[in-house]
Amino acid sequence: MTDLLTAKFKMDYAEFNLDVELNLPAKGVTVVFGPSGSGKTTLLRCLAGLERAPSGFLKLAGQVWQDEEIFLPIQERKIGLVFQESRLFPHLNIQENLLYGYQRTLPAERNLHLDEVVQVLDLGRLLKRAPEKLSGGERQRVAIGRALLTSPKLLLMDEPLASLDMQLKAEIIPFIKRIEDEFKTPIIYVTHSMNEVLQLVDTMVILKSGKVVNFGPVEEVFSDVRLREAVGDGQVGAVLETSVSEHDEEFGLTRLDFMGQALNVPKQNIPVGQNLRVHIHSKDVSLSTVPPEGATSVLNILKARVEKIGILDPKGYSVDIELDAGRPILATITRKSLSNLNLKPGQPVYAHIKAIKMVHESDSF
Amino acid sequence: MDFPLIDLQPIWLTLQLAGVTVVILLALGTPIAWWLAQTRSRSRVVVEAVVALPLVLPPTVLGFYLLILLGPHGWVGGPVQALTGSALSFSFAGLVFASTLYSLPFVVQPLHSAFESIGKVPMETAQSLGASRLDAFFSVITPLARRGYLTAVVLGFAHTLGEFGVVLMVGGNIPGKTKVISIEIYDRVEVLEYAQAHILSAGLLAFSFLVLVMVYSINRRLPVQVT
Image (cartoon, rainbow over all chains, first blue to last red; front, side, top):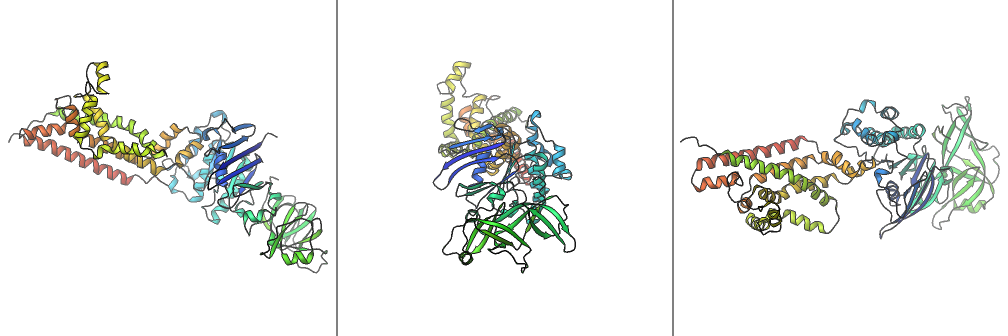
């Protein structure tokens, strides 16, 4: 497989260190996640060529962009950049903004054209307007379109939705999804908000203090017990790929198949056979070592094995347990429960799932 | 009183001088201002101070050194005389040289602050879209800096129109060659031809006023560029 991104950057500054080594598939959406100050933006700037790490190596799809001798300047890297601010040129109208990079791309290298980008991002009625007349969400769509029209080999997005409110975020995310589906442009997306990207992410990179904590397919990384310290509370859990197996009209439920086990969710308007990505919060998973006898109101119970027990914080009351249910699932239980159940790695358990959040129809899996 | 006849030659010469000087200043001032806005080098303060010197130096001091520099034995005038047969002092070319130096801060400073307020982002953005630095400079930075350019052109032009001391020291008072309006006014006053002095002075006053009004009103109408 040549569609790989290999990156290695090392920077030593008094106030900040970056020391990363990554091998990523150059397709789909890769989310670089970490708290502020973790080096996300610096990593992105290194990838873009806006920053030159004293010691660095970068190769995309067989082409070296940086090593000891080579340092390809940004304008030759064929990357699209989208930032938190749209950075549209105020002296050009929307169409001129969109075409700025297009006109500077060799005709032979233009894979994307104005018409299709305008259509996918729904920019048709904005073309003759001035950037200042657009809403924040519209501006961001134009910025994405402008970057795409350079036919980039890689689209780098640095918190592109951070300045937008919830409603606008929800409006833009499907567009980003469509870019990936229709144009096959690999995206590297930097964010500190996990919820924002759950429906997009294929590969996840967790950064903390300038170092990579973990990277890989989202289903594995997301349930890594080490995620909590990098991410903080409230966002960890599991991302599961399921498929719709049947609709239960009588009780208004949809049954999902997950690795041969069933999950029930409120009725979804999705045809049988289609894929559905779900998110399970670690705090919504409780554990039992005995099989359920039927006397429970919890509908979703998965058979799993204890994989790993998280670090015990002597001051904290809870602990993360990584389970293997075919795919990793994270459960947060109290230290007291851990002691009562006497859990050990390898032990079979029953994971009671109290809430499931639907993420989106993931037809790309 | 008869309506006095005005010698148009000094006016024409002055406009030529100011025009040529502004063109040279834009070509020279743009890279200096850009460098000042970009660099983190320590020599920056020295360059800034040199550019600002004409603001504080008495024109006679500047004129005196320029006279030596441009004269037949000067570092600049000497080689020029060897090449062309005449030095730069007391010539139109010498006046242009002197005016360029004299008006440099009036062009560099507005451009410098325009470039600084634009910041690094538009350049980075243009480059990320495939533009070379030069391309990005002309397609993005220059239009964004148009307020700065307008101010620079007007101030540079108006300031050159009004210079007196440096011109007198370097150029002397040669009709058709180095005699500009401000010197002509001085001459008229010397021989007590107040009417002509009035016409020229009032003309210069009105022109400067109108030009400044124009600049400020255009600046008001241009949208603020930093977003």
